[in-house]
Length: 272
Image (cartoon, rainbow, N blue to C red; front, top):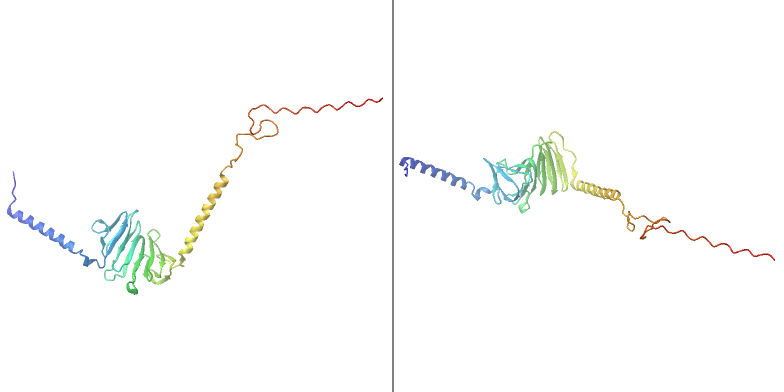
């Protein structure tokens, strides 16, 4: 039996459906390309990469992250994003980073809350392109092109490595305590400590390389000294000749007979 709804109820349901569809259209229109000027587009990724909206939203190639949104990656996740001027930032595994939380100043590009990012700033037309990356303990002002920032929440330490150009690093709690890093230099920033001495990234890599080579050399020496030597011509189970008994190549176990006794001396001549 077919149940027919009252006309009034059908009108209410139709109106509700219309409102829902209209809201969906307006929501879709709010994400039109004209609104992506300040957004970052996902250009490559691996593993789990999500943007934290009302619920975690897994991103795909070509989708956008908008100002004030937070990106997080899993242990196998990493992603590269590109902004309108061609600059890029890479989010490494086990990281959490907020994009342009200061909607009034897009120079505040990233806030790194956990993990590691790499930033590559482009300079269209050769003009300066000021951007900042913040962590709970440091503020990194871009003067160069490529640099890495890593924040360890357990130690509250921020590590900055400058790969190309220069960057300015300041303590978040004391902005006048700052240093300039040149290409190949790095620094570690702690929450309550003054900025320490820069370290050279190249020297650190050289020390790691030499330590690894020393370890490999020592391992090879240990293997040579601990491996028993194996004779090349005489099997260990075959005894060698000692002047008596069985020698190498003998086919029986009969001992070698002693040499014959010397002949008797000739008789002495008789005297007449």
